[in-house]
Amino acid sequence: MKQPFVLLVNPYIYDFAAYNYWSKPLGLLYIGGILRKNKIEVLLIDCMEEDKRKKKEDGRSPYVKEKVKKPDALKEIKRPLRRYGISPKRLVAALKEIPNPDMIFVSSSMTYWYLGTKEVVHILKEIYPSIPIVVGGIYPSLCWEHAQRTLNGADLIVSKEKINTIYTYLEERLNIKFSFKPHLEDLNSLPLPAFDLYESVDFVPLLTSLGCVFRCTYCATNYLYPKMKRMKPKKVLEEISYWVSFGVRRFVLYDDCFLADKDNHAVPILRGIATFKEKVEIYNPNALNAVFIDDEVASLLSEAGFMEVRLGLESLNPFTQINTGGKVDTQGLRKAVSHLMAAGFKGKDIHIYLLAGLPNQRWEEVKESIDFVLDLGCTPHIAEYAPCPKTEMFEKNKRIARFPIDEEPLFHNNTLMPFAWSGFTEDDLQYLKSYLRQNIQRLSQDLTQRVPHKCLKEQLTQTFET
Image (tube, rainbow, N blue to C red; front, side, top):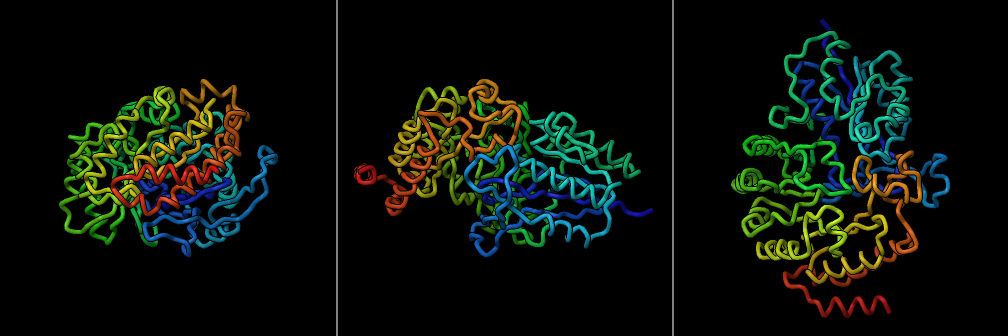
């Protein structure tokens, strides 16, 4: 009997700005690992090609990109739209070089990136009209009705509620019986994600838990994963050791709430990593929860190889803190920073996310938050709010957005600033970004010190404003 062959495709995207902050299609790679456990041949085409000429030492890189024509919904937007990743022509050429698959899986992440998924599905269906195409990911889980209307070339669209129906579909379409069918949200039973499908592995993302103990009003994690589910520390350490044995030294933590129940999860993981003979580098583009950071955790983060620590404050404003979920307050963040600096982290290595463009938010609030983080001696980051379906903030405020965000996922894009208003315009946001760049540039040497020089920061701020 012929061995089945399944093709995995990570689509290119259309956006106004995109950058590879250690991103890989982890869900798709887990599917690849499960398929190979069932003796199914797997091939990956990742359309999100990086611009290797500009790749940084830590693994981050820009994508290859090309300016494209805007769809009608975005034609009034002044900034240029680009395709990030390979072109449709190059995708077709790549498909012609491989054998015909028996089934195709296509990933789909951000809701406002659906155009790339739609286009890739159309190309696949034109080349393989009789081959089943399965699409899953965040977009169909959060925008089910829209995905049903839009991805009409797909044979099966999988939302979070139907994720484990994939096995029945695979067995029927491939005419085989699976011997290995782990629950796709049971991190302890899943095989290693198939990163070896890439020609080289510069970094490996780690997902040690699903869900979050907090209920942030702007985040859909609790909708996607209502209950926290964790991978056992022993399995996490085994996974890291496996990749270390193949020369991988850089790992990226994807968790939304890594430090929750820290004594039973994060602490034993960090202690285990700290004992490795081979030193590793760890990054956390998803913010750690500052409220869980004490002296022990801060020291372990340093010993385990965290090259930087990213935290979420969202805002200095107590009202905004409470209305976004109350996961941390100003005093809690101060304590976390103090612990981290005592453990040896410098200000340039402590990155703090601040939300901008929230419904009814004023730009002055973000500026005050930036100043607060600079006073701490840390590195602020402006995180532009992207309205996310199935969240409290989205449902409560969708009617005051300046675009029809409830009808068109393209308007979920944070670059469009969907909740701009007279108190916080796009020009205000550009001012804040410029203000932040100027302060960080002028304080770059100061930020390498553990103790911030507040007077210097104030002097430079006054100079810039003048």
